[in-house]
Image (spheres, helix red, strand yellow):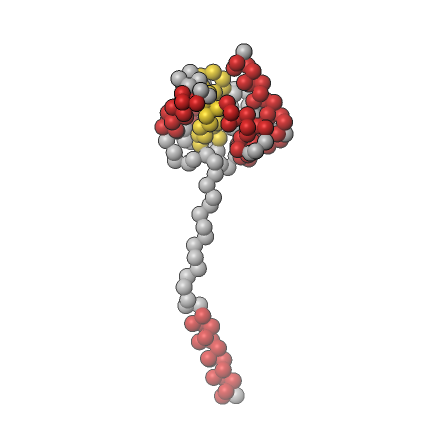
Length: 165
């Protein structure tokens, strides 16, 4: 009986010591999304305009948020290897503008005919001098996650025809 008590005490001490090791590592930070939170949107637009002057392209301001599934779906089309990604890269300098939960950069959206006031994702297209050429006002892209790649490509193809017409 005495040995059983010693074994139990020894086991309890060992278990207590096992819990005294290094604290667990903190979880990794969440992955950053495509919309740069905390970025200076006006400075990003200035860089986009400069790139547009150098490349001869237009500037596409893309208003959205990292929590928005439609914004993420549109981003996937823009950055993918498919026809939409190729169309966007060939014709636009893209500037992504985070609107948070409609609590950041809304003043920037206001500068472009309230670009994000009717929902996100929304876009504004500028010429290389900053003149507003087009803005989505009727939630045209607000259901991007339900749009096929072909639908998105067709929408931007039609927009380019309108801008070039």
